[in-house]
Amino acid sequence: MFLFTRSLATLSTHGARQLRPHFHFWPDLFSPTEQRLLLFAALHMLDSNESRQFQRRRKRLLQSNEQSVSLPPKDVSDLFLPDQYYDFEEGHYDGVIHHFREMHLSSWPSQEGLSTVLNKLYAMCPTQGTQTHLLHLSTRGQVLPHIDNVSASGSWIMGLSLGAQRVLRMESIHAKHDCFDVLLPSGSLYLQKDDLRYQYKHSIIKDDRHPNTSGQRLSVMIRDSCPRA
Image (tube, rainbow, N blue to C red; front, side, top):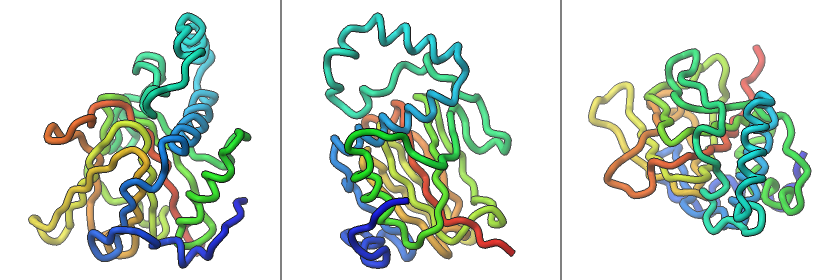
């Protein structure tokens, strides 16, 4: 689907901070321009998947707001509309995610400049054969501590953060005091794999100690496809 300019093995950890074994973090991998391209495309996909009622509501807002049409956004987060213009779900079927929209993505839209940024993103994957998931959290959105379903997931997961900062909290299931927090600014990318993937609970939370953790956030989650039995 994408043309990689360097080998996957080389790019997967190039320039990363290794915060723990099997956890790599790039705090500012994507520029503001690249972030806007990705966020615009991701919101387009999520918006087109919603009811006509919400699509009309957003269209009326944009038509009545001359600045949103004539001026480019100053900040990546300016691409988000207020919460009430999105059909956020109160809770996930498993009770883990709250105030969110999501979709599994089979293809990205055609958009000028996007393919180059997508090549950069997918070249960070440790292996090929991936699944892409978009998760949009409202200003109240959060992801409670959990471990992904082992039977439905592979050995690694990668998360690109866009919009407001959130805190990723990792908590060992074996040692109560073995935990660590990672602040995820917009444009950052993390890679979690192997033992850390299934021996630690992970959650996405707000943290009053850090600024700008209360706005909307969209993450592009990429994981390797689960091997078939």
